[in-house]
Image 1: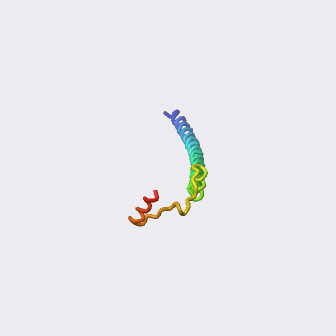
Image 2: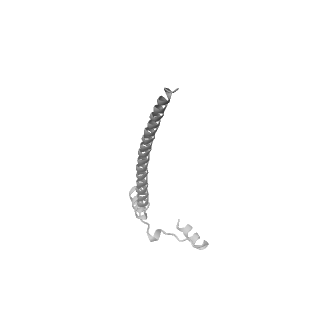
Image 3: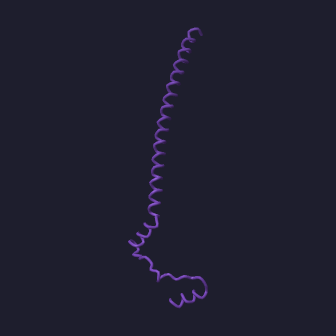
Length: 98
């Protein structure tokens, strides 16, 4: 039993050192994972900002009007093309026009 005590003590010290090294390696690995995820988060936020700006640009009334004129060959309306419906009498006159 006397011969095994130094052996067990050395084994315990070695196991403790291996545990410390393993924990430091895990800490380093987790640090790299956090760094990678932080970069990904920044990239996603930047992409979201770009998409929001693109959406705002595409939905501007001037842009929508320009696209309607280019793609669908729509023209600006003239004042004479507008029919105002305020009551039943004017509705009848609008039907007569058609």
